[in-house]
Length: 268
Picture 1 (spheres, rainbow, N blue to C red):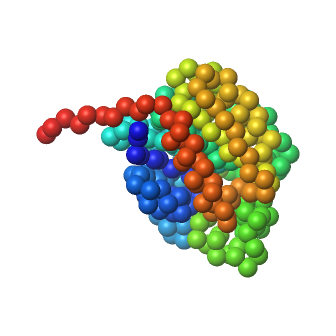
Picture 2: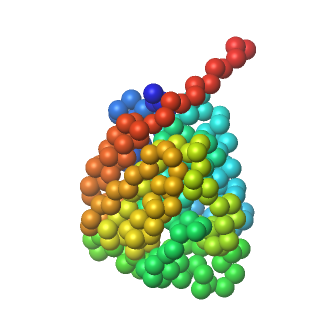
Picture 3: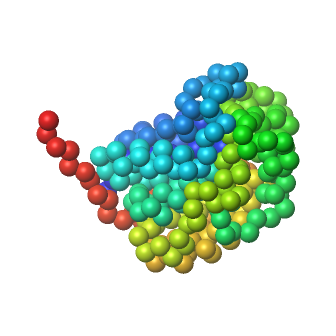
């Protein structure tokens, strides 16, 4: 059984958002790889103050390749866990035959899956902003507190925003709209087992959308399951109770993982 896990963050966050999951899994004896998206590998404060000038050009194709290359360089096939856009990337990586099991937490819209009004409304800051397809954008504090992490208490919002929120290329949203990374093959016979996790009060990736995604993904012959947590928002990997989500995700992946290939490294 693999002892390697790769964690994939979503838009508006970077690898720091996984600090709780990473420490928890490492304490269980796993090797945890949590790479940032390309050009997102500095502290959130540094990224907000001075985003890389080329961040605006980073899109889904580059991000998927970034993680695929990392996985192919690992000594063994990992468990893949992604949140939000990271959950979408996770599904693309599984569709490529990578990973021994995948968990998509609050996955972002995927080509072929209908989205509801709450999700559409949450895209307005990007899609209604001129030239957002060629700009690095930063989430407002109001959006963070009312839609992205509405369960966070008002007195904690600024602290958490400052600790975690980073600029994101608007291009990833437009890429998702036109399926730039390609369409997922829902009935792919080579796809590893997949768990889809949704939040009952998620205003970004609604529970109804996650259910619709599950109906598509269960066309594959490998095991596909769905778990919705009532009362949890899009901030589910950080808000109180995240430990249960982390433990459930790992336990499911370990129990359903297919045999992984361990690479034999040639002696120098």
